[in-house]
Length: 127
Length: 182
View (cartoon, rainbow over the protein chains, first blue to last red):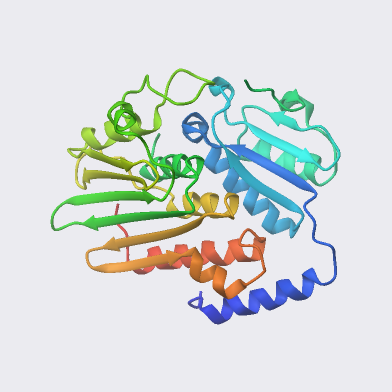
C-alpha cells in the first residue's frame, strides 16, 4: 500500500464535506462500550474494534461510539449499551465480536433488539 | 490482561475519567539496553499525595460501584514479573504520569499486542480528548498527534469512519516502518 500523506487526509475531508452537505448528519444512535479494567480484561477492546469496523463497512455516520468506566457488574463484562433516539437504552452482557456484529446489524441498523444477549432495559440508577 | 496494549488502554481510560484533555503515550523499545518503557502522561485532575500512596493497593479505589481498583496493580505486577517496575507521579490539578519498565527478553514479559486497536478505541470514543502516541524502536520513531489531524480535518469529526480508517492505516504503516519487536 502507498504511504498515506496529509493530502490523503485532505481528500477525505473534502469527500466527507460533500457527503455531509447532502444530509442532516445528526446522531441517531449512541453505543457505549464499558471499558473499565474488568471490561478490557474480558475483551471490550476487541468488541469496540469490531464495532468500529462494522460502522466503517456499513458507511453509517449517525452512530456515535463512546466508552465508560466500570459500572460494578464486572462478572457480566464485556457490557455494551445501545441507545437509539427516543427509545430506552438496552444493555447487552457477555459481548464478543460475533455478538457485537449481530447487535450492530440487527438492532442498530434494523431496530430488532437481540433479546438473548440483553441484560437490562433502561438506564441504571447510581447513588 | 494478556497484552501491554490493554494495560495502556486501561491507564489511558483512567486519565479520561480524570478529565484529561491531552494524553501522551510513549513506548520506547531499546534492545541494546534490553529495556521496554511505557509512559502515560496526562493533564487530568491528578491525585493527592495520600491517594498516590494508596493507588497501587488493589483494595483501594475512589469508585463506589465496587471495592477494588485493579488497573495500576495489574500493570505493576506485569512490570515486576518481567524484571521491571512501575513509577507513579501525580499532582493535584496538574496531572498524572505512569511509567512502567520491562526487560524485553524476559520470558514472563507480556507482548505489546494490538497497539492500533488500543489507539483507535481511545481516539474514536473520546473525540474531545487529544492523544500523542510516540513509539521509538532503537532510534527509529513513529509519532501520531491527533491535534495535527484535527487541524487538517477542520469541522469533520475525528470519529468519522473515513477519518478513523485513515488513522488506523497510518498507525499500522508507522509501526511497520519502525519494525517494532515487542
